[in-house]
Image (tube, rainbow, N blue to C red):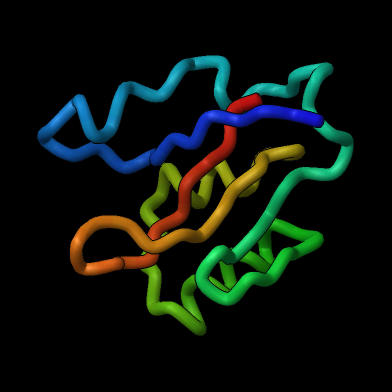
Length: 98
């Protein structure tokens, strides 16, 4: 069983709702499962590749990934989820830290 913290690569003006992302968040870690976790919580789907999660997020949910999100998703063993947040329930990509 693994526990994860959820972080967003996007920044907003309120640090209480979007804490700084730790520098080690996107580096390989021996306690991370061998296969990354890539899920769309909106559709209850899981993916084998970050590229397919990105395609699903942009095509099905209209998510616009910024350059930092694309860079992070391009790294090996990155775990990410697509979830709805805020009052508007806007779908966003979030990353998982072991």
